[in-house]
Image (cartoon, rainbow, N blue to C red):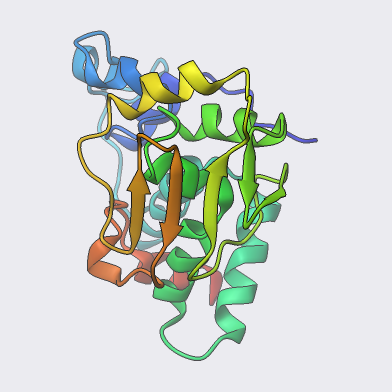
Length: 206
């Protein structure tokens, strides 16, 4: 399975904001964005000419890194979103939000998407009573996500729930019982991903 092995803190610094790729560390003063708010590399502190293409590219890279996807995977989501009725940018974000690894993170069962992806891969979660170990599995309204009974990661998951301040309104979480229910598809204003999806659509539409 292909993975992005680029240092996670460098990815956040390159985009100029916290992508919360390292979980709890991102909430402390050790966060690289807090300590060095400029892009990494020899020319990180230099002035960069802001072209229209650069702005579109940065938004795409930001979204791709936020959800932990490679270019081919991200492009596939865009093409699927473009085929659906409605606003392509919002469709794209909904598809990304509906990934099982993202849902596990949003429910508070993991401190980062990377941790959620590993937990899913190792079979610690059930969807509607069936074991699912595919991080990209698409969750639908009324689906129930639960930690597998007897999971060796239960304490790790409970520790992650302690860091969760709130759960988005389109889902419901029971941190005591370690279960979550998808109530409906999320509205755009309920998705806190800091990207301008319209710029991503413009980039891929060229």
